[in-house]
Length: 87
Image (cartoon, rainbow, N blue to C red):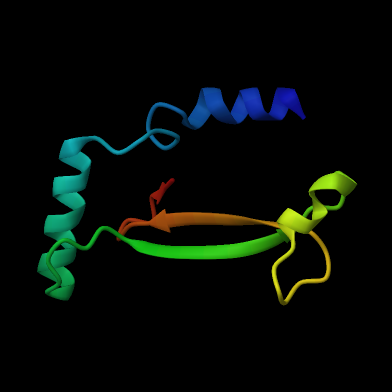
């Protein structure tokens, strides 16, 4: 729903729905090194397959992997120590 998307964007865009700045990255990497002792660590990557119910027939072969019978897309994201979601 376009109205929902617009409302979420207005509320969260400035702080949460943005690319990390250089300062954000430095701060996150420094925190992970202090907490976990790992240098250059940015966050945790996770992926999930989501079924694409209305995938066009001509595209279905490209959106099936070996284990899924239905076409799917992969959603991936990275969350940092503060559970900010970067992608």
